[in-house]
Length: 136
Image: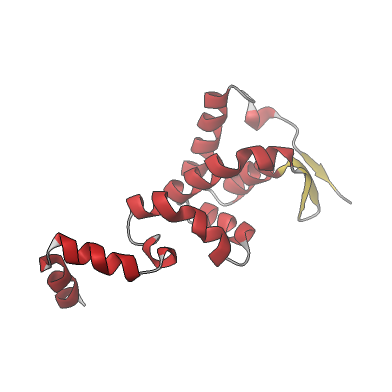
């Protein structure tokens, strides 16, 4: 495998650009960070259950992907009222994600959520809010 990569790296830049034109964007998105930033909008079409993808990024504490997903969807998630999960009702999807970060010990994702809300000027004491109602 390393031989193939080394041979591709030896090719002139013009040929590499021509080859990239034939590679689907859904494949290019996974190659590096710059391609991810350019083509991450194609992921929603590829992934059948996007919510499971978000939860998986939290479980793995993958801050780079999680940061882009939150910046793209936070307005929609704030408007999504009464999210149900494991006999609990959350005020909105953002509060659920924050709870899920705590539950899965995803400290990088949790840290990003708190600083993102401070950046927006919302919910200074997110950890103090009564965000969960238990269904019995």
